[in-house]
Image (tube, rainbow, N blue to C red; front, top):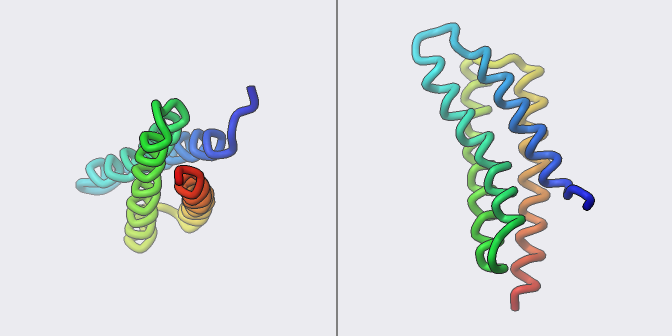
Amino acid sequence: MKENILVILSKQFSVDIINVCSHIDTFKNGNLLANQLLRSGTSIGANIHEGNYAQSRADFISKFQVALKECYETEYWLDIFHTAGIITEDDYNKLYNQCCKIRRTLAASLNTAKANSN
């Protein structure tokens, strides 16, 4: 069975988020902030995976909407970490671009699913 693009993108994004967050502990409360990014960033893929095994179209749409919401939260945390100098410019650009690509693909999948549910 061919793996879909969202599964592939979100899995790699989760691994990249884990790797970046594992290095954020150099200042007071850095670990608490890293946990916020870690939770939202890895939740995207978990919800996509769960949505692919949904019991109904409505369940699929619900899981993908949660994944989309987590994308927006992750983009927020990435922006905060970048602005505060917690992550490097290279890490920020890579992760932000990955997250945006996942978000755009999720939005397109949701639009298609909603259009086909009528």
